Length: 374
Image 1 (tube, rainbow, N blue to C red):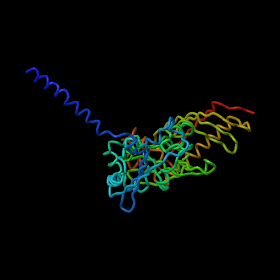
Image 2: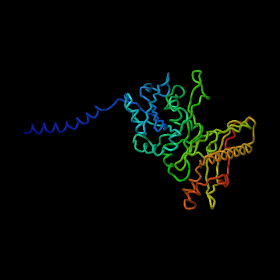
Image 3: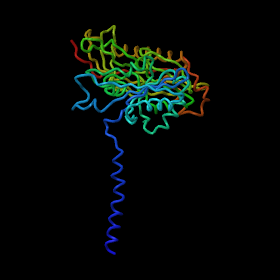
Image 4: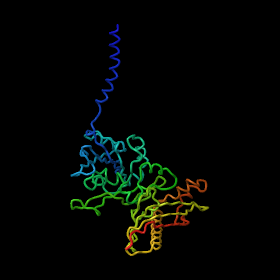
């Protein structure tokens, strides 16, 4: 009798372990999967086109994956379908290895998607539990396959270049704020304000590698959307006014060309006051702290401070007017009025942004470091 109970106890103990051990039988080695690091999405000829940039762990077998003696191979896949999921199914059916989407860091979104297909994009995004809402989002106009085939300097893989990890470059020079899918979702259905989607282009004007021009990816400008419609595109140099109202500000370089003065903008602080009766108007208060890096002509501090004020005012005015040309409140002034004084005006009044909407702009510039003087 005791033998019977002993045998039963052993079977009861061992049986669950078989399930635990059996679970290991289905595991995959990391080398056997294709790790997708970026997705490009387009819509043309009534079909969705998805472009998959892949990264394999065989590329990082060395002790330091950031620098290699030769370029890490870049794998780009393409699928198409009548729906976004259909395009994914198309590439998965033709993949030699299982695809893993948990490492996607960047989305490249075409104008064709931004102009009329954002609802489908957000629906797809919300249903795929592998995708993270803090994924960076960029627009593009160049050939997406060429964009995805750009290596970093020193043969760095694409995941170590600017569009995937912009923080290092932004640390030295803020320009256009980055945008995430979460930023887009939060603003897309809002009745006021605009969404800015920075656009990426290929440039060969700045670097050489192995004595040949080296392609890099850089910001070319930004697309703007508001009230669920596509408004247009503004090039980078026309968006300089946004630098002074950048929530991601770290550092910024500024040159006063006529005076040969080179400066670092060390700190920005701004406040927007809401005024007006029949329509909202705005008073902009901006405090700027700067350090002089070079002043070979020994220009006076007051002169430099006044010149900086003129530059800021001119850049803001130019960017603001460019926004009006494409019917975009690109500084999101109306959003602030909507948040803090929602009962004061109708949505139509809030969206009535004109050149007269700026009541006043107060700029205070403080030079905290005069730099070396000859």
